Image (tube, rainbow, N blue to C red; front, side, top):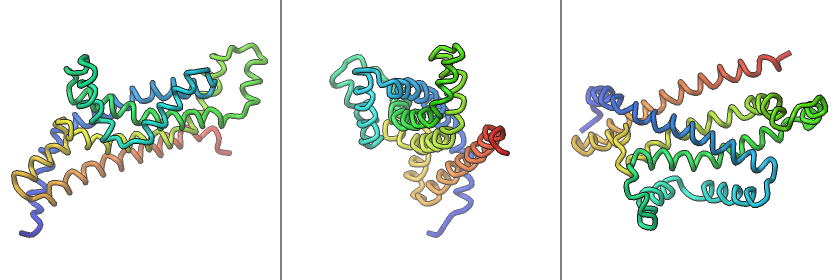
Amino acid sequence: MGFDFDYMLSLVPILLGYLGITLAMALWGLLFALVIAIAIAMIRVYRLPVLDQLAQLYISFFRGTPLLVQLFLLYYGLPQIFPLFIGLDAFTAAVIGLSLHFAAYKAESIRAAILGIDRSQREASLAIGMTEWQTMRRVILPQATRIALPSLMNYFIDMIKSTSLAFTLGVAEIMARAQMEASSSFKFFEAFLAVALIYWLMVVVLTRLQHVAERKLNKAYIR
């Protein structure tokens, strides 16, 4: 049949119409994952009894099992055991799954960044009368943000690409639409190439934004 370039171009505006759902999943996932990751990182940094062990178990499970399996467990498995989850819609399940999965990775990046700050800065802050919380908020976390930013942005990029798995739950995002178009036209290469190029463009833009943010954060450290 050959490659139908015109058909691929005609799919682009159709797929872009579903881009908002993809970005919404990724942005909500980013927000919730960061909140969870920071909480877990704090627990691990301060080695809180019991909570630290639970945090390690959480990280081990979500880093040690595939995201697709986690999404299926959340959307199809939990309602079988907990009736409360029967009304859980596919979009919400996808956001929760993405948040829990990537929070495990981000928590370790944030913890490593915090521990990478010289202990003398914490000791000096406490010596001048700052509380532990003030030291963490005003001294440690701002510097840890600079260290953790590259890995956190990489995880966000991975999260955007991972939203493509949400179509397995029935979420009508760009990957799901590409699948429907390919099934109806039998032009699978054109349909999936179009969606691949859209994802690629998003990643290129985010990578550029990452470099700009890194330069700004590192400006004070360049001599």
